[in-house]
Amino acid sequence: MAWLYVFAGGLLEIPWVMGLKYADSFWTYALVAAVISLSFFLIMKAYDSLPVGVVYAVFTGVGTVGIVLTEAVINGGIALKQVFFIAMIALGVIGLKITGKGR
Image 1 (spheres, rainbow, N blue to C red):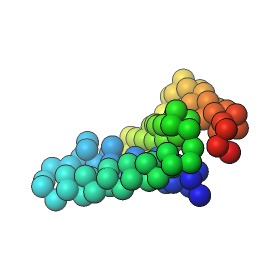
Image 2 (cartoon, one colour; image 1 turned 45 degrees about the vertical axis):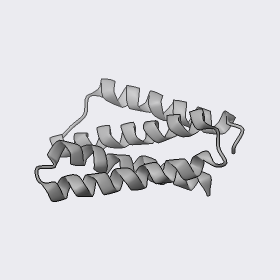
Image 3 (cartoon, rainbow, N blue to C red; image 1 turned 45 degrees about the horizontal axis):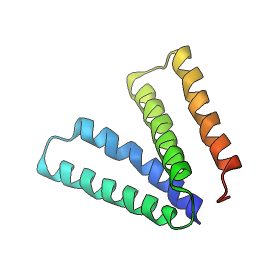
């Protein structure tokens, strides 16, 4: 269940980061704050049973990959160099999960 919290928190990082870019009123900032709160709540729940370093690395990796891919969809493309480095992040996250103690 803890890994579900990590991945859900990482996926929630996508809308709150994108929301910070596009927010333009009190209500949109309030919505972003609510999503940030939920994202961090899930990460804190994962810290109860998984190593902090691995959780944070996976959380930020999922968020980073998701944000770059979302931006690519919105902006209509992605460079081959970016695909390579996204794959490197994904491999690092997978490696940390496989080798982590809290599997």
